[in-house]
Length: 116
Image 1 (tube, rainbow, N blue to C red):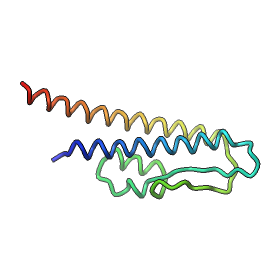
Image 2 (image 1 turned 30 degrees about the vertical axis):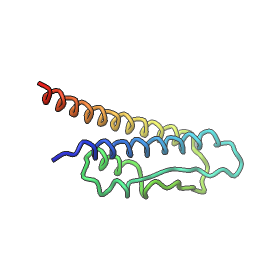
Image 3 (image 1 turned 180 degrees about the vertical axis):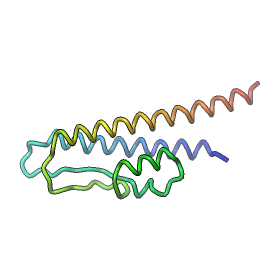
Image 4 (image 1 turned 90 degrees about the vertical axis):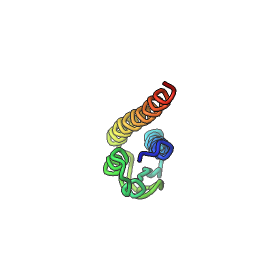
């Protein structure tokens, strides 16, 4: 049986992770000319990798390794790559927010059926 509360909390967590990654990518772009600045990224595929949810499994395959850790890499910021990663992150956000909308719509349908 599907547990809507679990689905909502898991999807909210995915949305939070995507937001954190977006902050890291934005910081990279903002600091690309800062001397001695090292690129940061957030990846969380190990956290999501054990998930049976298709959305989270797809996110895990796209995002990288390790649960919500900020990885500092001793490399310069490549603006084209950062913008590309931000675009991918935005698409993942769209998918996750559609998933949340779907969960809420399903719950509303069940509630309305129960009132009829």
